[in-house]
Image 1 (cartoon, helix red, strand yellow):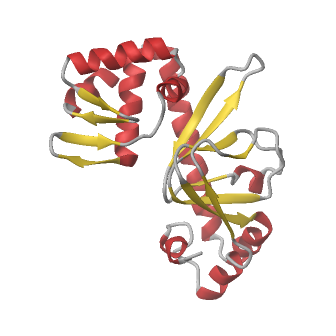
Image 2 (cartoon, one colour):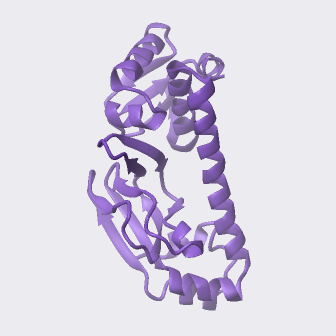
Length: 225
């Protein structure tokens, strides 16, 4: 694997060559097709994963079979690091949303590097804090926001991380199905589809295959509040 991508990541940029070599000594390269599951909720975990390309979704399944998406993650992000600090079974399942390439890093190697370079631990804690903050915001939205507001906020979050300029707005190739988008906002597919249809009618967005073009960013922001 070309480790230059890892070397440029904020998590590893501060390491000297020797520490970086120790970290990537037993690197695991993983290629996943869309829909392939890397690990399941409850599995033991001894690696964290860095997303080189593609997108992953982290989700949980209730006892009645209902699924909830905890997060959608893309290039440059890491997941599976919780077991580094709390050696417990995986708290979510990790599934590829698109063709995805990962770099797996063993916790044992990472612990050795942290002892030598404590700033890596600080970076990992920042990543955990960002995810916790996002989770807290999602919980608050479930209580205080209606479904259209949650859909608008989810589209804005996806646009912030995956969007790119288009001729008439911002193209957000989220690569989620309608069911996955509904799981992300904690609502039924029918209710989410109704909200999307309303946004289309108002001229705020245009729907494409597993993508959306945001045409009126300001109106969408107002609706998300």
